[in-house]
Image 1 (tube, rainbow, N blue to C red):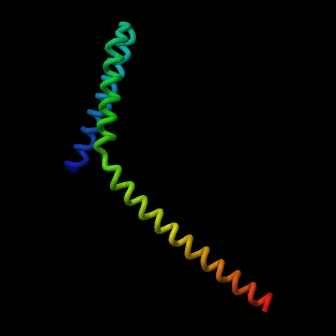
Image 2 (image 1 turned 60 degrees about the vertical axis):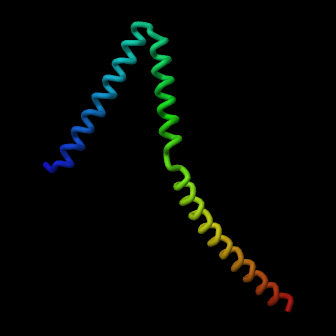
Image 3 (image 1 turned 180 degrees about the horizontal axis):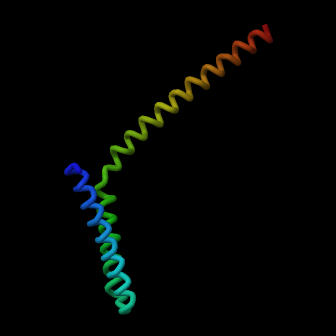
Length: 96
């Protein structure tokens, strides 16, 4: 087994153990009716999530999406203009 595969399995085990411990801790706090502690933990978790979102690179993804949309719109405009020119040519045949 390669070293990277071992690291992936160890990382997966750690992640499972973390979530198991977190679940057990929350259940224990619920059982002991420690609502104030759960409130503080949930507030800290939401703050952590907001920090992750704040530092994520959304601007670069937005720029990539904007260029993709502009490319699609440019292609659609070319298709519409070619259809319109076809109809104009067709109307000249009928009128003319």
